Every structure is written in C-alpha cells, then in structure tokens.
Length: 278
Image 1: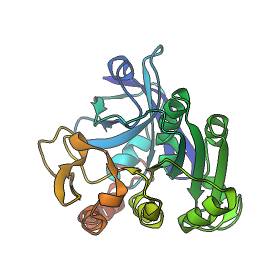
Image 2: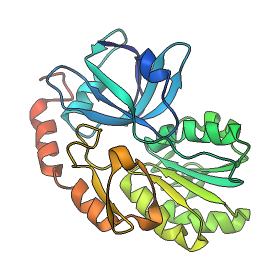
Image 3: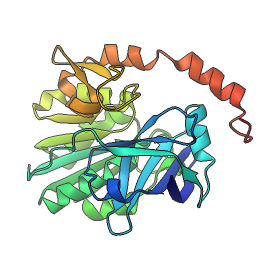
Image 4: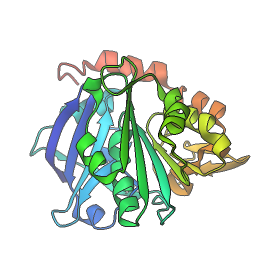
C-alpha cells in the first residue's frame, strides 16, 4: 500500500496528490508518468508527475476530475492508502542545452511541465514560460515557474490576469517579446497540444508535446494508447509520451479520446461522486 502524504484541491477541479513511493521517487525523471489506483477494484489511471522528493521518497501528481475513478482519488485524505502506484513509465523528456526554450502549460500541464523547466534550467537553457487558463482562479504555481524562467507570460480567456485571449495568442506574444525559440515544449490538454503545434509549426523547430491518449497497462501490452506519428503507429506509453507535435495525427487522436465520453459521464452520474457514494 502507498500512503497519501498530501491531498488538496489547488484550484477548482484540479487536485494535488503526494504519495509515499520511495522506489519511484528515486528513479523518476521529467516527462515520465505513473499509473495509480484509488482502491482495489478501481481502474488504472495514468498521471503525469509534477514533482518528487528523492530524499523524502514522495511523488506528486496534479490531476483533473473527469470520471468516477478520478473523483474517488479526489476524495482521498492525508493518511489514506492506495493499492497501486506503478512507475516510472514512459521515456523521460530529452533535455539538453538547446538555447532558448519556450515552455507552454495549461490545466494539469502547468504542474507537469514544472520538472521539465527545472531540468532545462539546470542544463543552462533560457526559458520562456507561457501559462494558459480560462480565468485567474485556475492559475497555480506561478511563483515556482517564474523563478526558473527568464520571462513568464500569462494568458486568461476572460482577461482577469495577464493577456486576454486563448492559446492562439502565442504568435502575437512571440512577435511582441521578440522570442525566437530553439525548442518548444507543451504540456496540457489535447486541444492545447494540437493548437500549439499547428500555430507554431512554421517556426521549423521541434515542438515536443506530451500526449495523453486512453491508456490501460502503461507497458505497451494493451495497445489502446496507440497514436500515429509521421505515418507510423506508436504506443504513447513506451514510445512516448513525448512526440513532435508537427508529426502527430491529431484528427485520429481526438477521435480516439472521445470513444468513451458517454460511458464516463454515465459513471460519474451514477456514482454520486460529489457525495461519497460508491
């Protein structure tokens, strides 16, 4: 069993979960993920890792409640135990001294891109960070990201903080700030990844996206996380999760991610996930 060290809702519907898992903490690298189960009969949920403490033996994830299983994760309390935390899984993000790197994060990706930025900084890169959210109340970890970044730009769709707009403001920001990146790294929802890849592909630099397809075992056995990259079938769990967004078949990925939306909605509705029912 793995003990919950900290669980809190950091902004509406986004939860921070820190688990005692010394073996995973000792090996995890930026860009990798873990698979957790909230209880014995639960499904396996892949979660990107947002931070870790090798000395304390803890691993931290930030996740959004989207179905019954994530709702049950969100109801955990400090001192509770979960039966499964498997990892580290996937390939680490390739991090070298690239020069200027623009890092883009939204939603849970604001958290998962943090260890990537930290390692980029250690390697001597100049980091420009862009954070996107619907409103200011959905922003978090800005201080942590700002300390590692030469510049940090905030986009909110309602204009409550930073620049008013959507992720399509990226080219405008780059022109105004005279940003010429040698590499772009994007973490967040599929729309954020695909839109960033489409809008910035003309820069002719790698656009590294962390894909989040449906996943079960996380070891390449089940095949449900398959994606098409540069015309070839890849498994996000073992070949990724990082790929060059310019080469991803986004139409196919969006279709595959929608396969079980109705079932997920029905599970949430029938589970009473807001009130603690099973």
